[in-house]
Image (tube, rainbow, N blue to C red):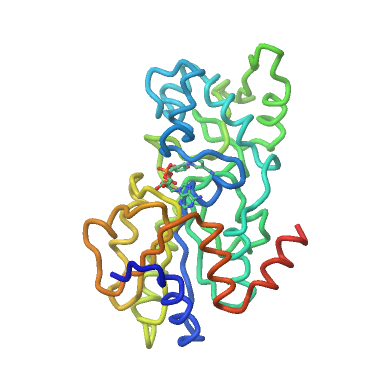
Length: 288
Ligand code: CNA
């Protein structure tokens, strides 16, 4: 594994030497912390650390469907804070958009529910929202779909004490929630199907080692997403942009892995500089 102060240069050189190579990003909450959305697990600033005000029996209960049925308030409180529109994409999101503009983006798999990849203008067919998003609503009992306003209006009508009335299904009176994957719920089929297709595509590429899979801003603890890096064919090259070594990069490092330790926006800035893309990146950010 390459771990050095020059890791950004190693990665940039790989991209420059292989102009036909494409990149698949696997991203997590660390992509959006600089936008003001806390991640789950960073000590002191993570959501799990800050959930104490919601009186949850355990932090993950906020995304537990059985707990939601009993007490929707913690999820509503969190959803009000995280609802799309409240935040702007980061420099790193715009770098991923620039990879698309340069014809170098194969796909982004995101665990994030904040839709900031879409906000950055990345084409929807290139983004797999593995844990769903706020972009559609459904009844948790009968799966009937509802317009966004049905849930959003309830968030907006919280009283001064932060209490909500809850969105309920017109057919069966079940609770309505955004299609965010809770613990105990299945991931979207598109996640599994597209990943299988992309792995096959990687395996069949003539010079597969040229393609890069960049894992960024995730603790790689939530499965099945966390196992994706281990499924990358060893004919492709893996990179990790993160504050620390995680998951398969720590447990089963590969000789040609590239680990770039640091904050994603700083890494994005340095990488764009090395690739000669900085001016375009800054234009994208300015145009927001
Ligand atoms: P996590 O477990 O909180 O891990 C975040 C990782 O990112 C950690 O390894 C941090 O060290 C690292 N990190 C944090 N900030 C930065 C930064 N600026 N630069 C580089 N690295 C950084 O979150 P995961 O994404 O691994 O966990 C998966 C969960 C988080 C998914 O189910 C998401 O739905 C959920 N989540 C999403 C959001 C969002 O949509 N923005 C926010 C919080 C949690």
